[in-house]
Length: 173
Ligand SMILES: [Zn+2]
Image (spheres, rainbow, N blue to C red):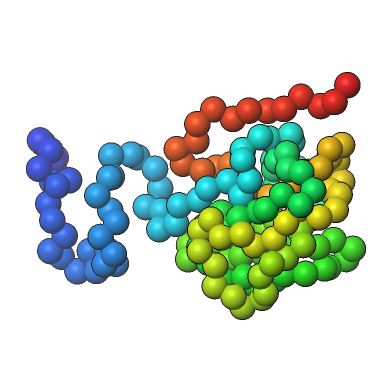
């Protein structure tokens, strides 16, 4: 089948395959990306990257499974998107908050003094804790922001679409 002209893409979804589109959020579909995003993300703190995501070269190899964002001690950290808190508190000497989102992605924030509890629903932009403690690799205070789908870690910055210019801070001399 050869589709000519642009009418096909604008055909309203009268078929059953449009059943999932119940929330009316699919207007802007000019991109060629993968599945439509049901969840939009924002940075948990102002976006000043001090260390980028470095995927491990093997499942248990070294890497940096998130991005480090400059953030002062006590700085409020907000949920990158709405969801449900799946974990909040200390684990293995760290303290973090994990939020599960509607698209199945989990975002993680550490080191954090939580202001939410596991099981709690949070809105996008709601404060989930404050920066409290040190994160390995950060010379200055920072927030480590992680994201994963299932067992696979993602670059959290890839969730920020469209992503404007990213400011990569230099290391202290
Ligand atoms: Zn980190």
